[in-house]
Length: 150
Image 1 (cartoon, helix red, strand yellow):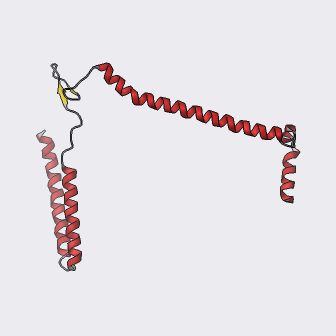
Image 2: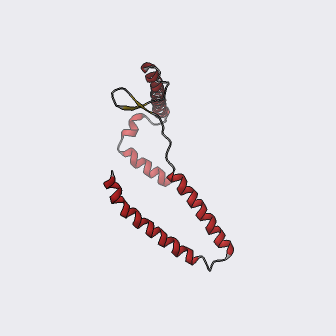
Image 3: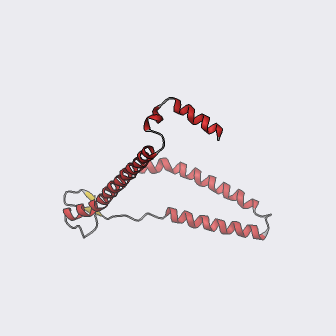
């Protein structure tokens, strides 16, 4: 553990020196700025520092660590462990809702597809042309010439 800190210490020290040099250079450049601009810069620095402090703050632990008798650790929900089957049931409810939703969407898509095919079939059968005319190779040429005429 100490070797890790020892190897990171020169890097952190170099980064700190660089940050101090950049800050000094930026501070020297602000001496000639008007008051309103320097105040906006000061406010921006304060916001940046506040964000850095929030980012550096330790994260909250999602679940406490429970140490059992055998010197092993496991994530748990604290004192309220509940029974295994009720946890499994509660965990399965969103999965079941997802599966039911996918089945409903699939059946709706199948029904829409069948309705579209039925409309096309009805249009073909009620058209003035017989269905065999659509398979005729000269029909494409007829469509092209009639499209040019219009």
